[in-house]
Amino acid sequence: MKLVGVCACTVGIAHTYIAKEKLDNGAKKRGYEIQVETQGTIGTEDELRSEDIKNADAVILAVDVKIAGMERFDGKRIIKVPTSVAVKSPNKLLDKVEEVLGRS
Amino acid sequence: MEPTKESYLKIISEADIVYLNNQEMASALMELVKNTSGIHASDNRMLVKQLLEREKQGSTIIAPKVALAHTKTEVVDNLILSFGFSKGGKLKWAFEGKEEVKIVILLLFPIKGDRCSDFEIIKDLMIKLANQEQMDQMIKLTNAQDIKKILIGK
Image (cartoon, each protein chain N blue to C red):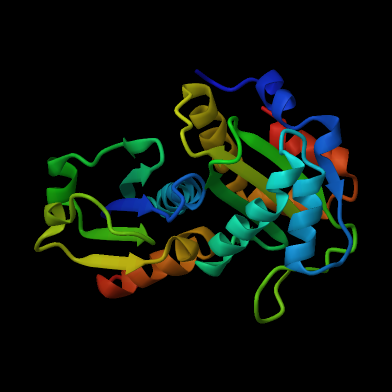
């Protein structure tokens, strides 16, 4: 499975980066390919490439605020949750992604 | 620039380990803020208010028994990091409900902060805090110095 994601929290210094790590680690443990962009106080990092978005089976948005570049995901299957879900329950979130994609 | 152990040590000084009781969130935050170096006493109330405002937007519990109280604020000029430790582990960390924590990490980021070294320290710390095994190990510790070693360890 190929996934892309964006993480962004209200303050932009904590949950954004923890959520990215949790998604990266959780997805890789399942053997998925994943690219996660962060939009935090540092600015945008690990910006998603259009090719990665195009090839992704789903987009995970772990966000508490409005993010830049939503139009990049037009037509894609999007799973949107607060950052706290990715931080506290990354496995449940990935289970949900599998369910949405009909792969559970 | 990769943060070094020394760069963390400058931030978490010996004085910045705060021993907390099994108290309520607001009073624990005040205790933590009062005992963290680099914060002017006249700013304590404002900081606690800002931290509680952030908490209202969503719980800052990031792992079982671990909370990360944080805010961007105009009252500090430098990145500030400290932590509080409640041996009892029954520090109430919720406006409602029964969530309890043992360790409260305090992270204050200057609103005009733009130092690369501070950004790198934050990212490095968040990677540690996202490591479930390390968090599970940290929460079993009964000595604040050992907790500090995990937070600053490379």
